[in-house]
Length: 52
Image (cartoon, rainbow, N blue to C red; front, side, top):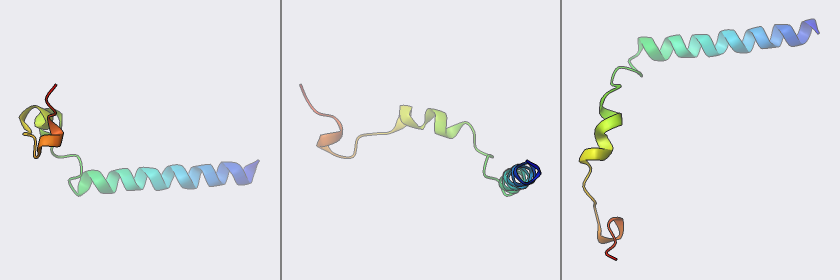
């Protein structure tokens, strides 16, 4: 039981460290563009916009 608690704490601390690293290095800086990107994309080929 103590071994499993130790492993879970190590994993939790690892995920927290990865999250803090990604926040510090700008992974989550642009949170607006991805939500509206689909509204402004244009189809690249005829297969993207098939005609009925």
